[in-house]
Length: 55
Image (cartoon, rainbow, N blue to C red; front, side, top):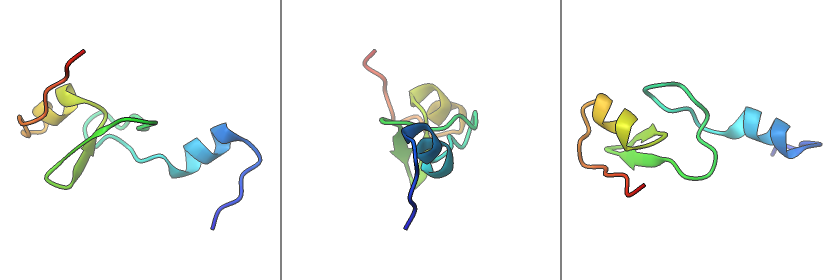
């Protein structure tokens, strides 16, 4: 169990990283074939074309 004194510290310690660009995924990332990415662009760049952004 982790105890943090601020939300930013908790994010820094526990947020997963995009497997392509290495940015911390805060909130909504995408998962394809067990791999985490920050969005569809990074997912496609890693050879996982099934994710589509609606933005």
